Amino acid sequence: MPSADNVTFSSVAERIRTLTTMLQGMGTRASPTSKKTEVPLFLRHLVALFTCNDTFDNEAKAIAVTGSITIEGVRILVVTQNPFNMSPPSELRVEVVAKGDKTFQQVVGEYEVTLKEHISDLCAILANYNSHSGDRVKQFSDFCLFVVDRSFRKLSSRVFQDEQSWKVNLVQRIYYWTPGECELDDIQWINRPMWASSQAMFPDGMRQRTLDGSGGQVQWELSNTTVKAWAQFLARKANDAKEAERSKPAGEKRPEKVASALRDVHAFCHLLYRFINWEANVVQILLTKTSLAYRLGLESPTDGIRDMFNPGAELMVPYLDDMGREPTESRGQQVLQYLQSIVAWHAAIMSLYDRTLSLRVPENLDIGLVEVPRCSVKVMSKDDINAEFFRRYPASSLAARATIGDSLPDLCPFRFTGTVHAETTLMGLLSYFAEGSDRVKYDVQIQNEAVLEEIIGPATFERAIAVSNNCCWCCNWLGNKLTDINLPASHGVIYAWSPPLVGVDIAVLRDLEDILWRKLASALRNASQTRSRRSVHYNTVACRLR
Image 1: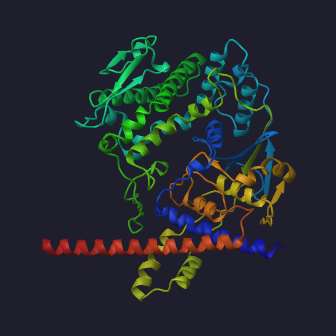
Image 2: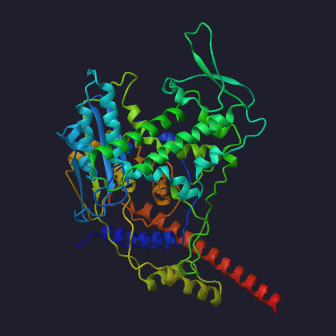
Image 3: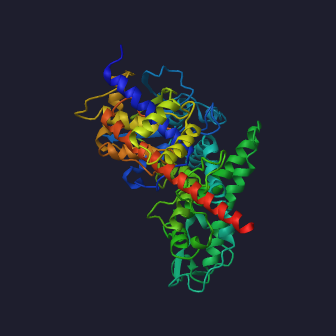
């Protein structure tokens, strides 16, 4: 017989699944937030490297990563949500990822692999890297091609996010920007970087000089006169990356054709990474110290709700969740975040190497993988939703009750279509294994619990989580509620969401449920008022036309 806690959890989880599914359908969202600086850089880089094309999905599965660096080595736990996981919903297990035994030539070209296979192959390549070899440049290049190949779908989607989210071709807007007369306060002469030593890298319209007695040091000018040339140089480098992405032949079976396309993608993304992260900060100056970012004509995602009185209506304001601007973020910083997201894989790769291309990866690397099991798809019935809503929020009049009561059935889901998010499960595990924890769990057995505790144990002190996508509103709320959980950015969107089976007290979930009911009531009131204003407007127009 199920325990009282299990029955209570099942009931609360069902209501949370119902409410989040309804609110997702209404397009409910809050302001984006960011705590990226609180997540160690090495975890953020690992998320990029672990993201891969999936055997079953067109897009890579969302993953969450925590870990720690100790004197014994590095311990990493990866959690992924997998709708194809055949484990029973009542079972949570960890798999220790062993280093693979394949050579580089064997793993490159294996485009669609499981996440476990990808991590295993990644560890094998790193372990076989020979820093004393005279062929370090080729080894580095091969590793870059491997990462680009395995993460191509995710990389490609990021490259074209500007067109999907802002409805503009950012490259064209940057290229055709017309600067004002006084964009910069002074003239800077910047040493030409090593990565731009080729004459082909010389931006059109640039001014340069060679310093006397400096061994022929070449400097480029950054000023009002040359700022447009710098912007066009940035546009061309970003466009090169886009064109390389487009040129990779879909379904191409010939290895030489695929390899050639991947080399182009790597070369242009690597160069864009170099430019963005150049210590002269030219890209940052262009986007935050000039009028460039404010003249790009980007759409601003706002708090939109779906018009549930108009079936099939889209969100009033289109947005791509991860591209929303954070409250303290300028437009230029937002564009810079977009560019940095494109080169995230090269940033991660470069973090593994020093200037001589020697590898900086500890020998003792323990990695565990948890695939979140399927969750229940059960949701509340329409009658139960109606009864609970009006119990909490009695209607002020029969008309108000009729308006809302007519709307609720159209919003009620038939089944739950979401998942237990990867970062949600990881937060639960960090809380479950934390020192002094009550270790609460609900109708789930943790397999290999001792192994899981050994891997995640050191990470329970820093409690930092890196995620492959920005967190949803529910994950962000839970991270704030659970003491000292450090999560990255949140886009503020409410998705269909189910709570974790471990580590979270019922009282916390009840608090979340109460907030979700309030959000539903607020969204319904706003929608009802919107419909009333439209009705008055249409009636007024009709009277004028008579």
